[in-house]
Length: 79
Image (tube, rainbow, N blue to C red; front, side, top):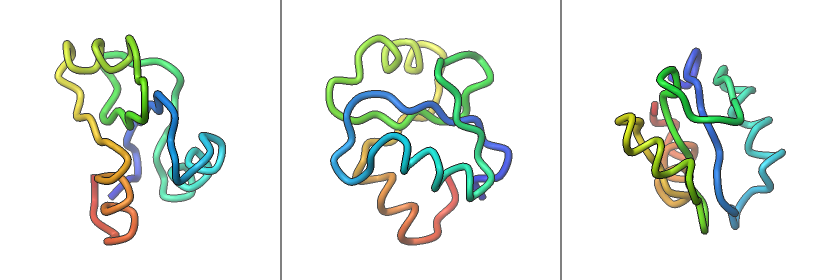
């Protein structure tokens, strides 16, 4: 599940405001932080994600785009 996962949001999302998505993820037990580090489990990347995406890739953090994120949330799939 999402419980205990450390998640970072970056870029512009169409389906959610960042605040809404943060609430949804926290409601599922995830911890939403502002910066990518070695402890980050997942990066959710919207449009124009910038440097956080590069850093996540460098650190081997899993990256989800918005479509994959929606599929996981709707399907109840674990990250």
